[in-house]
Image 1: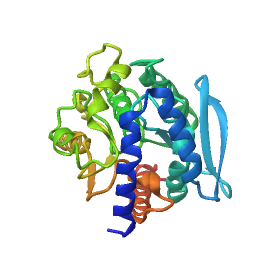
Image 2 (image 1 turned 45 degrees about the horizontal axis):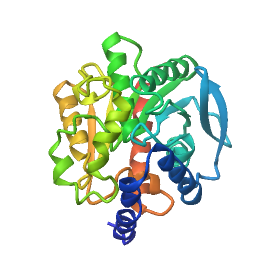
Image 3 (image 1 turned 135 degrees about the vertical axis):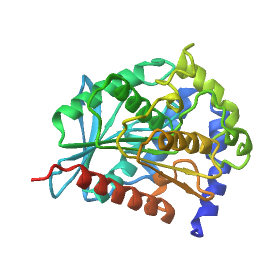
Length: 302
């Protein structure tokens, strides 16, 4: 582990966890995250970003400057379904796309409480269908709530017998809105970023009265039989650790080719700190190598 890891953990505990615990509501969280992302997160110079319209809504594309790619990463940002945006996650996704030799698209999916469940999932499906129609190889992924949205989208595609992406990944995905995993309580103090006491409030805003065990909201309850390869990572001190452990175990039992990587004492969605944290860059390198391997394996033989 790097010397920067404990410094970052302490910084997050003293600032971000406190901010998430005390913020007055979604608007305050949105403003704070947007401002900090502009200050701390920077995309590689080899990538260029531009806004466009896809499926009737704004999306942010990030593409290599020097060449075109037929591999697209469709990425859903995290933020508890109530904050975050393509801009807050652009730098990390651009860094991943650069490593994978891909282009990436980040949708502005509708946020709660203004747009409760299933608005985000319905929008995700529409963007997915548009990307599926235009892209060569398509991989979908996301972090935290965006990781949960990714896996919920995968579950919906499987249930309907729809065309599937080549591969799927999740960074510390939120998969269980009942918060029944042991880590949710056992790691409440150890988690340096997420305050467990506000999770129910976030879930209520997102669900808007819907059943938290609905597989479209909590993909822990999805039947993943027939899914493409999946890669998931989480930290051992996260309150959402068991969201990843349990969904990965379930996938394995259902015959899915799933890779689960659990890291020691790293914060929630640590790859977003790729500009400063060596472990973040290592995770992006490993994920990019896995993505490349999946696209080679799925390429048609000539």
